Image (cartoon, rainbow, N blue to C red; front, side, top):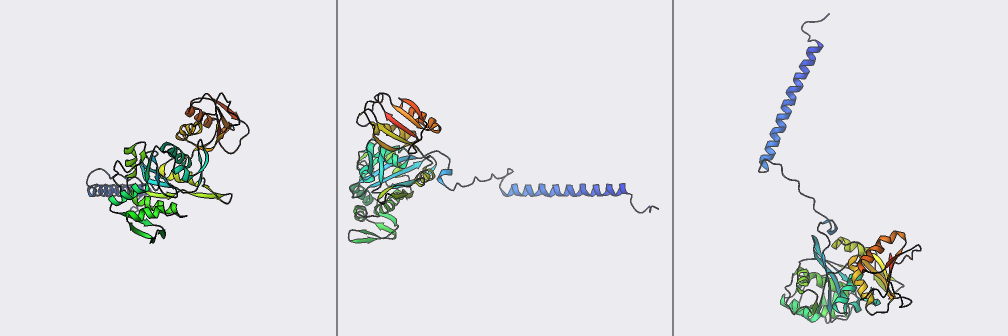
Length: 361
């Protein structure tokens, strides 16, 4: 028997539905109120934009590769060389080329980094670009006396010395040290095994001070203003090029560590590898080919004469079918020659260029 005081199933359903509707209205009203309070707190009716994530490394920053400068300081026993880069949305940074390491100089074969430092400006630019694996857009040369004069005008140099250095009769470092002109010159002129570290510490301190360059500070530069802009671009991260010892005594760049460092600092890509052989006998062929290939994304890993100098047509040999496109890129950079695909990879390079008489340096 049904009790008249007990609601029917239909009535109970209607009561539940009405209660849900009321609760839904209350919830919507609360949400609307909270949104209004948040908008008022942020100073307007529009929600605040979500900030973009902060990039963690130079390689993640948009803007493309930085402008690179091949920088050399002469007048010291050991090489003072560096690639310095700024702009392009990337951090200002420098990579020091260690003294005494063996590098491939296009057109001259193997030589030490000390010899590269003492080349003329355009040749030094090619040598530094080849070892770093990225084209250095500009070059600048300063001697140690001019560097000392610049430090003197700055009122000294604040450097964070990474070790204890002997400079003449003085012991300098470690840690933050204010260096005079004489101390900087003595520090860099000392014939020492740790010259690379000394040079890195001085260069980092110099770049941080954003020095104003006078017209007489540089011995040579392809573009004085471009060099000054890069050298005064502000505080920089300075790394010493990673190296390894082969054959018990020969120091070379460590790979892939160097190419990865260049990518991190400057956004550059690992270059393709090219052998260059002079097959026409003209002087300067290797250097001229290097000046064309390196900006196109190549590193010269071997530079020597061909078996003969009677090659009429330049041959661009792809080391296996997988490298045919790389050979095409080399052909585009050089502008002459024919592409040949080798079915027997040598393993040393991606392409081999035998320069013929159709190429003129």
